[in-house]
Length: 282
Image (tube, rainbow, N blue to C red; front, side, top):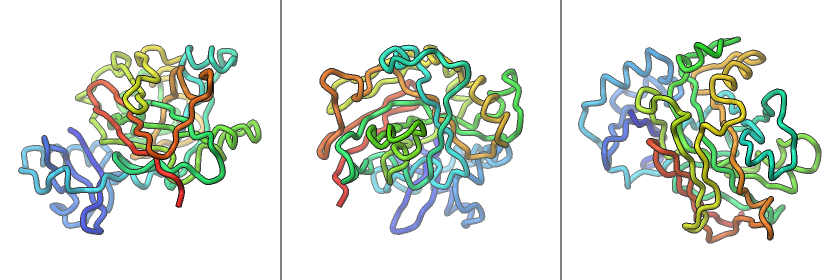
């Protein structure tokens, strides 16, 4: 299944993507479940699957895309988690995953603007795979980790590099409003299989900036789920953004920053393309 969060005529909703249409699950359930997050546990996914053969209610082109999970309880982002990115940053291979947090207001949806803030010119792209938790838990074993995944989406962990480097803590540069794109939809785990077989690309104005197989992750997805769940209880709808590969703008010569008028795309096999225009903060 492809699951999407959207806004239509001022109403925030969610549904199933079917070709060029959407099954408006929110309307069909009568608002019993306010957001998609409430249906990402195993029981909720079974309810969604029961509607998979329903006819589309809306054209996909008629809605405003929201972040896949508009109201996540927790978004964990993983830093420098590809060898190529470690090399370009000059960092040693870490003993443990580098984890920082994003807030919901820092996210934007597919086709919605990524906003370059007035505070900086250093808006960078980071193409990543997002893992969305379905079955919650604490201290999840690596062997059981995939049982806790609802699905996957594309993510652009947009970074304000100078603010990221104000201190050793990344949070300021990672949480400006509407700098992280999340979408276009969630593809359920049963349609993906082993995510290590996927490839990811970042394109800026049609030119490939980043490309890597997901098998190049320093810490793979089961390791990340096990590690994060060791210190935090994971809940349905929580997101783990797994890190970016080499080729980010900060380590190019000359450096390359996103600017208003640019189009940035993140593509992942079997998921799709997350596309966003870049605009100046008004």
